[in-house]
Image 1: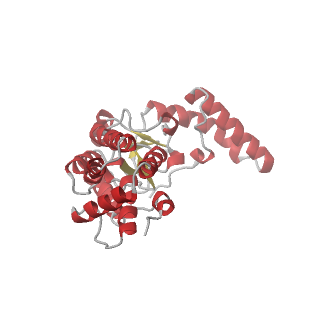
Image 2 (image 1 turned 135 degrees about the horizontal axis):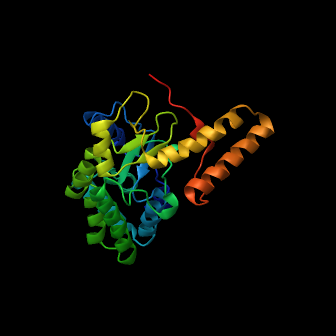
Image 3 (image 1 turned 135 degrees about the vertical axis):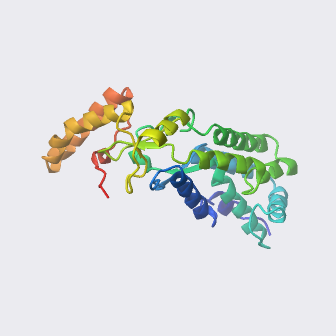
Length: 279
């Protein structure tokens, strides 16, 4: 019976053990002194849309025989859970590729990030996770290799790369866990930014961590402070208006902040006016 390729390519669900990875990242941040890391969003280092496109093109380039064989390989080598069904095996491998732990950093909500450069093709270019970035880039390269030259060997390389206990995966995970707390927020506004290694170490030594804030409270971060100063100017106008007037005020606020803080890029979100709630 032929494989259901539409179902294979539509597989976007997370592996059952993904929740354990999210918990591990939150625990690692706590060991570094951060009270409770926000893990609202699972951020892909190699963006999910790019990964999904490459993965599905690799499926299109491969015969059923190749896909069935790599499913068997994945089961026999502990990459996925035991199942006798060839269709279920390859779908489970698709989950592993899309949600490879070494490519996913649980963290602050996407719309509350002031630095989310998804339009640039990835958000960890200059952050704390150089080893995880290398893992993500290799994952992308292996998929491109598969599209160009589908083979048993190249599919096995992918399976090994997304193996939760594989050497490459564990190296990337250690990198993410070591710098799990590389997040900062403003003392007043619920806006978040990723930190470099040096900035993270500085926060560990100098700044507060309160339950409910989800990141290091960084009262001196230039980018956060610049945006917060603009939010403080606009907040009374927005809060004291209603209906159409409030919609106009929000729009003017977004345009001002986008122009003055992001060179006109569409980054600002209405929710950036939300305040932290003291515990």
